[in-house]
Image 1 (cartoon, helix red, strand yellow):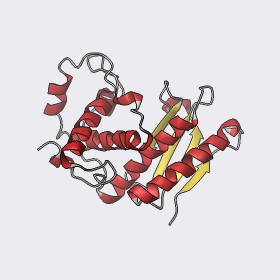
Image 2 (cartoon, rainbow, N blue to C red):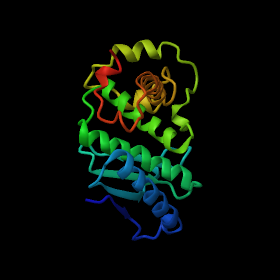
Image 3 (cartoon, one colour):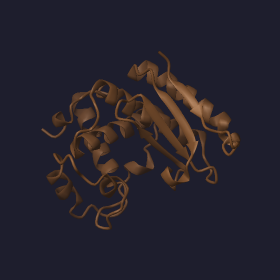
Image 4 (cartoon, rainbow, N blue to C red):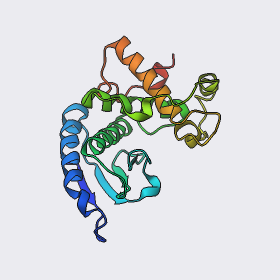
Length: 204
């Protein structure tokens, strides 16, 4: 099986981006196959600014079966090959994890999934994603998030997208990344090799 790219461009709103989208996908696909052994994934790229990270003009989502990736773009933003490549890598790691381990069951799973995918980006590109940086002070966020790890019904936007004024923006990505990077160093494993690791091992 192969991974396939589908650019939704009937209205030609993404025409100027088609070339770099294809290049970024092809380069990330090679890594996905060699490092993650992930295949059978359809990647849909669409013009949907509402779902794009404002700072990047790109947003990603992988379905719970790890078989479908959405990349949402804001064509009015300056979208770079580097950011597209990183986003494809991030989502391919999710695809590998969901195929091998299963979808997130609680907040702890989500933190590890995002942390490993973010770490995978850094390992391949040698660049730390902006959402792995802590924006603002931690205050009581670490204590609070630890108390909610087992929650199946949790507010994803609060922890990952800064919709709660008391939680620093992207705190979930930052916390998950730091957790996974520490575990990676301790166990001498890469983010790719940890794709199927149970999140409980990182919180033990």
